[in-house]
Length: 92
Image (tube, rainbow, N blue to C red):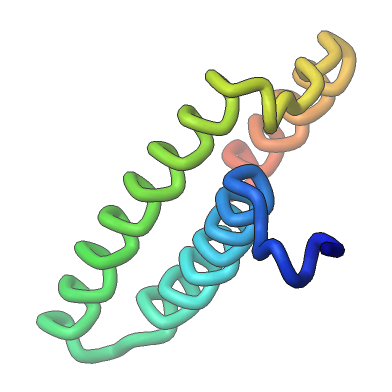
């Protein structure tokens, strides 16, 4: 039997869940940023926090299993990003 007939592996399922959570958090982030009705915005922000928590759980589980190992950030990139956002903060 090929892989499609056997179904998805646990790793493939977790990869799909993680990708879905990334998409979902992006959507809720946009909704919360653009919402003018404060009670609804609060609801979106609460849902966004819950979705980020789910994403974190999936990420942690995948990392424990060796299925998701993003490379560590290089010191130069960290410093460039820090400088960028410091400059943005000072310009506000």
